[in-house]
Image (cartoon, rainbow, N blue to C red; front, side, top):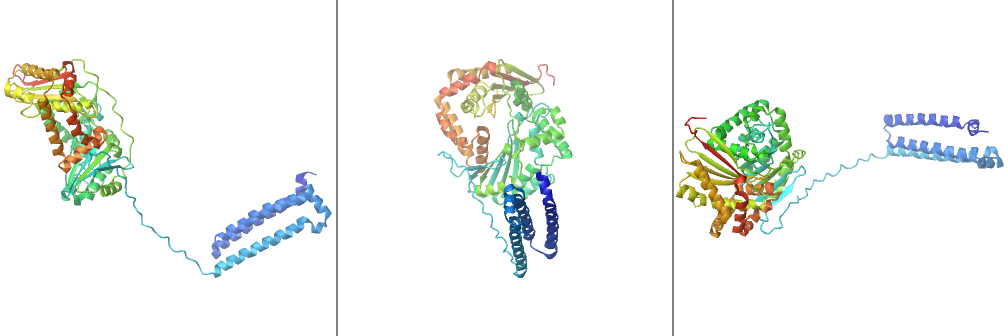
Length: 560
């Protein structure tokens, strides 16, 4: 006889169906009793457990003693009315009855016993772990200087100075002219304006009013590499400054009406500093000519056509990309402690979301292979002569050597070029020299203001001859010692103020990758030799590496 037929003959299917229906009915009744009589939820779980155990156990016994040959053989050997299945069923019934009685007793007992109300959970006050700060292991670095990074990438440096109850904050945003391209030039400088023109929580002008009411002041500047924001304030305004700064970083309002207003303000600034200023006009053209590939060729204020055409999307994308916390470094100096700066930074700046890093600037300016020239003829009483040479980046060793050389050549009335061109030969009214180093290779720049009607060719020849002489003959030990003393005096004088401390720390952190490099400057200055000065002069002051610019009145006396 088949297994199915045997199961059907012994009513196994009917019993299983009956068991399932009875189980469902029992579960339904118990669930309603739990809801209606207020029984504990565990009663339902208890019934489900009994049913879950009972069915498989009954099936196992039915299989063992009613279906298998061994079970049938045992059933034949005994009285059918007292079969193993029958006896086992009696025992199972008794066990189920006992469990049922115990369950009912538990329910009744729970009702009779007094209700136990657990005590409220003990609320432990959060214990803040002391933040871990980075301290320098270098002996020349002041021990009190500390730094830390927030999870969103914001870098914070703290230099406590408790001489007076004032504080300064510098925020270095890695967004400058080098991060722009044709079509959006000047946009970094534009945000220097927009950052003072309101947020979603503050109206236009409210930033300045709140800061001034708290005793603070502020300013900002934009360069080819950075936009830097500065706040000076009393210690009592510390949290106010954090609130103001975090609000404009997180909720800056780029309102179209304000954008148009500031677009006009930027045009006015450009007219003042470049279009209507002879020095600015020539300097802009010199950079645009000296660089043929690198974005350092673009003016920080932007080209006029770009200023007119920034779109709302251009502005929003630029701000989101470059004003992310992972693209900024903040420096605090003054009457503060690292712990309080950390707690305030965590509270106010941590919520600002990290963004994808800005695209890297990979363009390298190719080596110049020949002299370049710029001539601007305009109404000018005093002609201008500029001479520019390609030099190195801030991190290049030669940059410090070139800085000392420029001090020898053009810093102060006792400098070589002033004595030669202004005092002795009177070819110029004034002469100056500086280095515009940055993230990428910069320029060494000389600028001369000549007397009305001066011979620009003669002044150019004399300046170039002196530069080539220093490249050939070098400088004296006395000249180097003087330049070294000038730089050391300026270095220590700068670090006497909290403003100088914050500015110096931030610049070295951003441009060299470590603010501790600031304190290596005295040793590096002392180690510089006349031979290194001569070598950098020979490397930089080459005619094929030179761009010359002249601004003068038209030769026919007209105005162009």
